[in-house]
Amino acid sequence: MADDDVNQAADTTTQEAAAAAPASFPPVTNTAVAEQPKNIDFILDIPMKVSIYVGSTKMAIRDLLQLAQGSVIELDKLAGEPMEVMVNNKLVAKGEVVVVNEKFGIRLTDVVSAAERVKQLA
View (cartoon, rainbow, N blue to C red):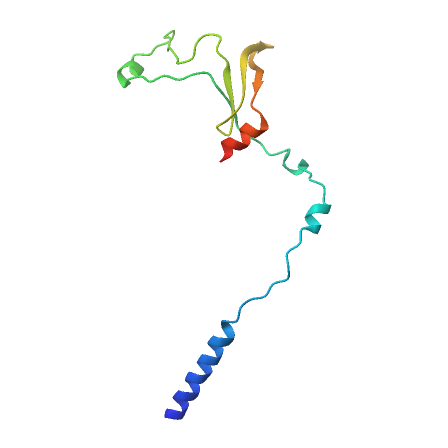
């Protein structure tokens, strides 16, 4: 029985030594990636949430409950100040409110540079 224990211990040690051998991988090359043109057409149909930030304020619940038709809520933005265009909660542009075919719109006056948009992602 002692010989069986010694043989099992030797087999286990041999298996562990074989399992602990360092892995070897071929060198990584970027030749396939460099040859393909950078095409972003596949993402052009992805829907994005676009929001226009008009302004905000803080109110007590008492004041909220007293609101009625015709009430005016004062916002933190000044009249004539540019509205902020947000895409997925990230600033991409600023603009002014316009009316087109009886609907509100925004005319872009300042677009955030690509470098600034990349900084916002970090």
